[in-house]
Amino acid sequence: MSTDDLVRRMQDKATKGGDLGATVKFVLEDGVIFVDGRSSPAEVSDADRDADCTIRCSAETLDRLMTGDLSATMAFMTGKIKVEGDMTVAMKLSAIL
Image 1 (cartoon, helix red, strand yellow):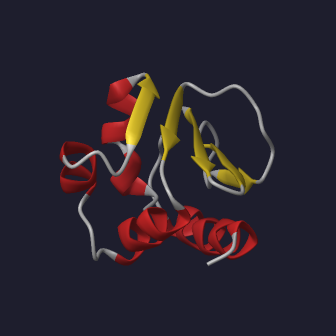
Image 2 (cartoon, one colour):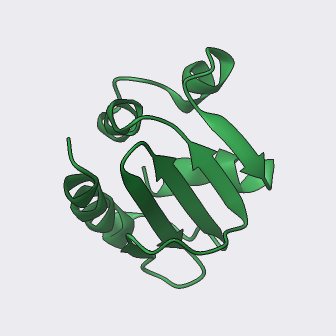
């Protein structure tokens, strides 16, 4: 799963998702995905910008989160994702994942 594929899939989900009200950056092993959820629908890109919340994980983990094969809570508890910044933003991510 490439970062470009994940960006496209997240863009599709973001157009159907709710209001995040913040910015999130996913740091993957081969790139980043930036979600500007301050607008509706959220804007998704591969830009490396400062965000309210940064989530570090593998592309595989993000793919499993997006397909629903892995819950965000389980991923966090088992160390598959690391969250920096505003934890309340991370908790709202189900609106776009």
